[in-house]
Image (cartoon, rainbow, N blue to C red; front, side):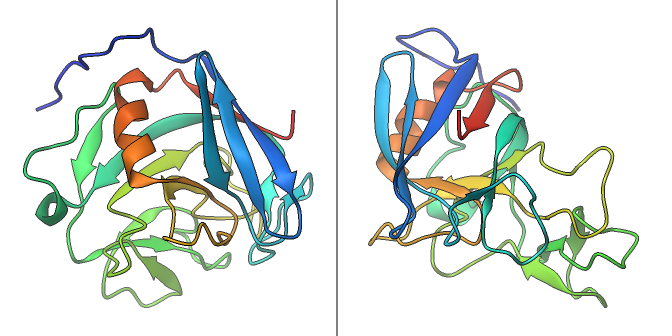
Length: 184
């Protein structure tokens, strides 16, 4: 069941990702009343996103929904958008030649895919960005998510990441109308 957020602020329409260090792939997530440390792709930002390039895509992308690890939270996190509990067999196809490219899949899966149930905690909360979803372009990038950072704020493989604490504070103000703007 989806719970309505108990927010002190209004929902976000637009949040900007500002790059602060290309070498370290760090940035800031800025919007109405927020300025949060963030990690981006190890290759910085790119206007020509390609599968496996390690870059975060330049552009504006809606949050279409998300997932959370139910074993890592005593209750479903309060969010202004739908969050589905992850299962240990959840995956995301990253094989450009597969019919399920850039789509959720069940593991084991015969084509290349990413495990969504991870030990490192970065997908304890993972939001799906509308990057190369409809229409899908083969090789145009897959699994571009907004998720939790590693403790050292190390770079992502092309995603956007913030701390668990910041994500939990931000979630009630996010919706499927929220747009994340990379590079502008």
